[in-house]
Length: 130
Image (cartoon, rainbow, N blue to C red; front, side, top):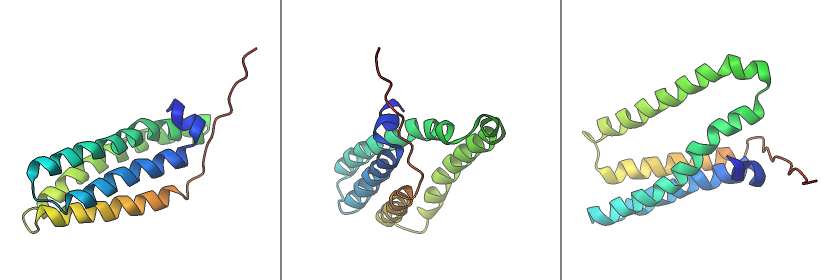
């Protein structure tokens, strides 16, 4: 959160979505399960960038009264997304090969990376030491 505040959330979100998207696209090309697992572990670096900065971004862009009003729906949306993010691919496994699920995931995260460039960037001003 502190790094994103200094560097700008837009850049962190873009890179955070780009890494899992690129890793998923790369993993869809290989058939060695251990190599695919290694690539997907690398994708968690980008996911970690997103996980730690989304809540910080929420508090930076919302005003005091709005924080109390929208924080509960915000957290509910995160949990709901987590449920559907696990449920839908597991249902698709009955119909499609894992390779196609990885490609769909890569396309989705690339779209989110592009959309993250449209957010309002918040860069915290550095405090001068006295």
